[in-house]
Length: 183
Image (cartoon, rainbow, N blue to C red; front, side, top):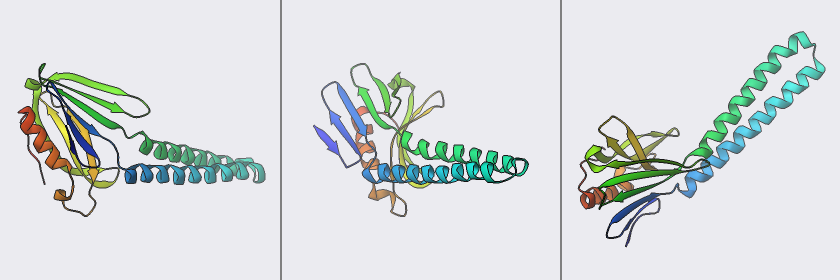
C-alpha cells in the first residue's frame, strides 16, 4: 500500500515501512537556475580577470585578477551546492525495530541502522532550507543527532498546506515512535 503526496510517500508491507522523499520539480528547477546563474557570473568574472591581465599593467591588474578568480571559484562552489541536495529513503524495519536513512545525490550516504530505543523523536519543524521557509521532517536521536528525512518549501503558505506533517503523524502512529510537529 502506498500513501502520500507529491513529495513524500509511505510504502507499507508486513515487516517494513519505507518513507521516500524526492525533491519537487520546483526545487530541482530552482537549483538548476541558481547553478546556471552562478556559472554565468563565474564566466563573467574569469573573462574580466583575463582581460585585465592582458590589457592593463600587471602590477595593477594582478590583485584585481586574483580577486575575480576567487569570486569565480566562490560562485562555482555556491552554484554547485544547490545541485547536491539529496533525496531521502528511510526504512523502518518493524521486526528488527530499527531505522536506516539513505541520502541519494551525487554521493549516496547511508545512516544507521539505529534502534527504535535510541530515537527520542520523529517529527516536523518549520525552518529555513536553501534560504526558503520550509517544513522539515526529521528524526531526533538520543545522542543529539538529527537526521533529516525530507522537506517541503512552504514560503508564505501555512504549515498545514504541506503533506509532510500529516504523513509523519501517520508514520509515528504506525511505528509507535515518540515525537511532535511544531508550527
